[in-house]
Length: 178
Image 1 (cartoon, one colour):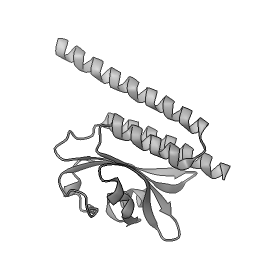
Image 2: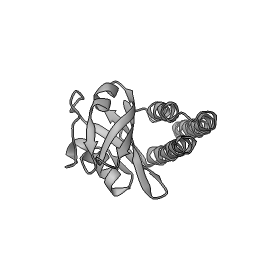
Image 3: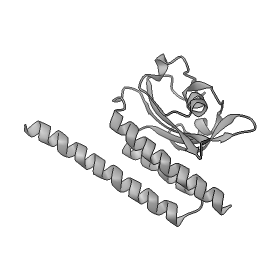
Image 4: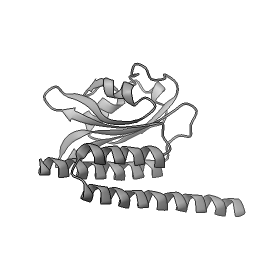
């Protein structure tokens, strides 16, 4: 019973931290109209609170049908920013194409897997969600765990999609301001 109570306390504390982060992000969104600043803050929160190795926000170029990471946080940020993905390419491109969020806990077994040059080819788990506003895909938000790490859970997926909704608000605010 004591162990279960400790686990429940840990889960409640983690949920409270996540709600606090969402409130903090809302504050940042209302304080800044600089899209990059707010998206970097959201990516940083995602990386920290979901205990991931990397966090990225890709934006979609409609003309070329490509995705480029405008924000990347983590050890492989530069490699990720240097890579352009096509819509439909890899898990990230597939999420942009389908408009549906995905949790992939074994990327190396997914036939859509594309390795970004300069990043490890070891076990990777991803959460990917499209950034959609008014039925239009603006980009994709991604977090990754690399190596022998715990898989993502449904609660992680739910929190991540809530963060992505905040990213869409930041993008729309910046667009309206421009």
